[in-house]
Structures are given as C-alpha cells and as structure tokens.
Length: 307
Figure 1 (spheres, rainbow, N blue to C red):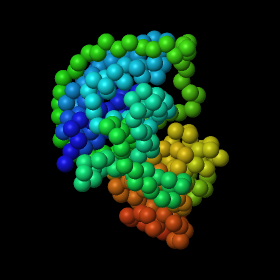
Figure 2 (cartoon, one colour):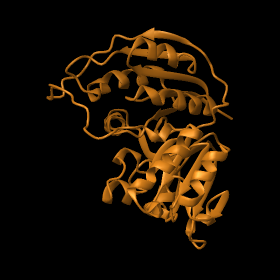
Figure 3 (cartoon, helix red, strand yellow):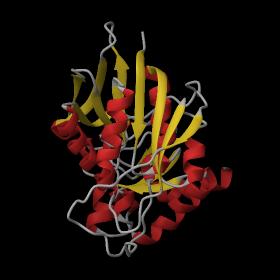
C-alpha cells in the first residue's frame, strides 16, 4: 500500500533528489517544489512526477518569505505527506506551515515506512541517541524533516516543470547582505563515503595520513565533537554526532573513534562501518562491520599504499 501523493521541498536544492527518492518509495505520485534556478528545477524533474518551480529567491528576501506560496501549493495539491530537509530554514518554514495548515511535524527523522493501514511511521532518535521513538503521522497531512538516506534504487518518475507565480510575504525583515563564513562549510550529510577521525588521532599532524586515505577512497573527511569544538583541527561542519551532522554513507571509516553513543547516533545508519582503534575494548567494535585493533597511525600508510 502506498500514499496517493507526497510533496518534497527544501530551501537547499541539493536535498531535492534524495527527498524525491523517499517520495517515490512511499507514494504513487511525487511532486517537488523548487526554489532555485531553472537548471535546479529541471534536475528535480528527473526524479519527481511534477515540479512546481517558484523561481529564484528574490534579492533582499529570505527563504521564509515563501512560506505562503508553499502553503498555497500544498492546499491545492492536497498531499498526504510533505518531506523536507533538516536545515535551519526548512525547520522554520515547517513550523509556519504546521500552524497554517494544522499539520503535524516530525523532525530529525532517520527512516520512514508505511504501516498496514497506510499511515506514515517515522523513526527518530531520542534521549541523546540512546533510544529510538516510532512516531505515527496523524491527520490528513504530515510534515517530516529528514536528512535523507532513502533507497536510491527507487524508480524515478520523470515529470515536467511548471512555473508558479510565487508571491513573497513581508516578514518585517530585509536581507541587506550575505557573507560566507570564515570557516570551511561542507554538507557532509550527503557524502557517499566518509573517513572520520577522533581523539585517537593523537596529533593534528596525523590528519595528513587520514586525508590521504580519504583521497584514495574518494571520501569526505568527518570528525567527532572534540576534534572540531575543542581541538579545532577541523571545521564544525564536519562534526558528526548528536548535536552535529547525521550521515548515512555507503562506507564509514572510523579512525581512532571510541564509539560513544553521542557520536554513533550520527553515524549508525551507515551501510558499512569500518573501525580502526588500538583499544580493543572500545564501544565502536560493537557497532562496526569490520574492526581492526591496531594503531591507526601505523596502519594508515600501509592501507593507503595498498589502495
């Protein structure tokens, strides 16, 4: 049993494809609402049965000013489910939509499925990742915020792009200027392969060996909270864990990471977890698929050479 219709929307256009995979898995019809360039709208049309293109964000406006336009499209399309990303802007818009449309919102969802009645069941981490709650979407429409990770083999339903005349709302706030953060920014949540490092790295100069391994694997670099927020060896955007990013890569290589729950809540949805740690009693060996008890600084050069 599938839903009749699911819509997807995110202020980050790079999330649309993954959200569409989820919509195609759960519903008979998928519709994408795109706020971005025409090329981004056309790209979404490769996955969604229909694309409603709001155009590019008007200069001086914030994404939240398009809440009314999105609400109107939802009222017109009458979907049973709206899938959104987990970004700050998406969270803000989801809250506004929930009030306007009397819809329930479930945030930080790790997986979705339908029960025997066709209702949407969402799983999300609670108590700092020590447990998972299963939440049912009630009412005519539910709004679910998820970092993605849906089955990419779900059949695509290519559709056409329909330009929508979107009116922005006056929020009493005007965007005067934007400036890039001084620190590096990366969307690690969408990475297919990740090499992550923890305190077992020992010293900052040992990062080079981990980066060489990542380059061989075509992987993004990630880290635990202490590496980003205490040692400042890597940017905050690469921190994986309960208050950082949640990732679902095909391959997750954990180097010198003990595997405490605060970190693993962000990584335990990885398809394959490989751990290298010199402490044979480290908790991560209970969660990994392949584990090696060894000094990673001795292993990495040889492993990189073999790759």
